[in-house]
Structure formats: structure tokens, C-alpha cells
Length: 307
Image (cartoon, rainbow, N blue to C red):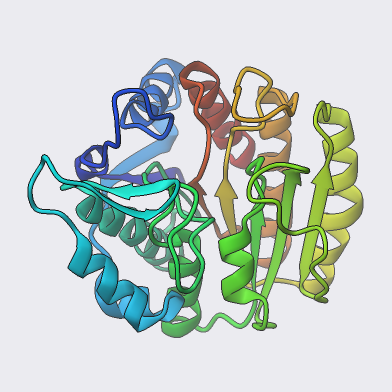
């Protein structure tokens, strides 16, 4: 049994500027650390395939999806801003379709093969994209596309989505706020972009805002107290993870002080819950993480945890 990693070279086609933090080199840093990790004997690597419009329509308004397609530039010299932080260039739509499609591939993998865990090393990320808008570097909500595909195509009744990116997964919350088939758990620095998630009232949304300077032991204690009993009571058929590693102390996009050991720990604990409730089935998708070295190291630590 191994972890299947889905990615695609086309995910590098989306480039905003040479200095933008959400850049193709992020995936190169992950791949470099995977090579150094010695995990090749437990990793199966596969190319992702593209999501289609019907896949996207489950998570997003039809008008929004069609608008993204219509606005996609064909000229490499052109670009289109979808929101103040999210730009489309000539390669963005293709990259975003492979990123969203990788989650569908991951669902098929963990439902149909002996590999019970999958990780999607893709970009652009997705958890800020709402039902009707791009936001925060995110075009399509990759984890939501995967979750709704699983609910539509398989005998899945309940999904837990765990988001430990340092920014609140506002887009995922927006899509599933009224859907009691999904338990959404998000931990994030507050105050910090997008400045949401602190006043959500829902029995199936568990947000953990934490202050700048949060240490790993504080984050672990909050997660252990707030998330794990709720996940256990919810008894999900599937666990999906928005895996953002920008809470690492070396990442200057925020002011959390998490380390590789914390990402190993959350992987290990989620694996226990998946083994208990989901026949071990877990899919994780890359979200944030912008310091190349700590991103690569943290992904490897998380993968070791879910092993």
C-alpha cells in the first residue's frame, strides 16, 4: 500500500509575475523534498486529468464557471484580474482545470484501488474560491469539487473536510455552509486575510481562530479539543484535507510558529480517524505554503504522518 500523488506539468503554466508568492517553483520545492525524503518506495505518482464543466458546476455557479472560461486569455502577453488578488494569464485555466481534476482522480483512487490515501500536489490552490467568485489566488475550489464528486458518484453520505491552512477556508465554508453532509473544520490566524470565520454559526462548521505567534503546542491543543471529538461524532465516510503549510514559522505570509513536527502530528491523527471511520480513506490537496524550503519539508512530514 502506498500514497498516490497526483500532479501535472500544466500546473506550472499559471504564472502571475516573477515575484508572486503563488508560483510554479512551489511544486518544484515539493518534488525536490520528495526525492530527498526516501519515500519513493511508498509513493505512486500519477498524472492528473482535467475537470470538466459539469464537475465544476457542482461546486460553483454555472455563470461563474462560464465567465472564467470566457475571460481566459489566449495571448501570453495578456492577463485578466478575477479579483484584486487573483489573476488569469494564458496558462491559468489549463492549470486550474488540472488542479480541480486531480481531486477527482484522488477520489477515484482511494475508492477503487488498494491505495487508501492520496495527495494532490497542484496549483493554483482552491479554498478561497467561493461558489460564485475567485478569491485569494484561487480560481476553482479544488477540495469542494472533489467532495461533491465523491457525494455524487459513490455511496458516500458524510465527508469531513479539514483545512489547516493559516488562512480561513472561506470559500469552502461558503459552498458547504448549508450542506449537512459535510463537516468543515478550519484553523487559521486571526486577524488575517480573508478576515472571515470568527462569527460563523453552524453545527457542522468548526472554526478555530488563533492569534499571531501561535505555537505548535497551542494549535495542537485547540485542534485536539475542538476538531477530533466532532469528527468522531460525525463519523465521516471520507476525510478530505485542505493542506496549507503557510503556518510554518519560516513562512512570512503569516505569523504562526508551526514546525514540521506539527504537520506530521496532524497527518498521524487524521490517519487514526480515517482508519476508525473511513476504511483509511483520505485525500489531501495542497493549498498554501510559500517558503519553498519549509513547504517541501512540511509536505514530507505530513505524508509521513498519514503513512
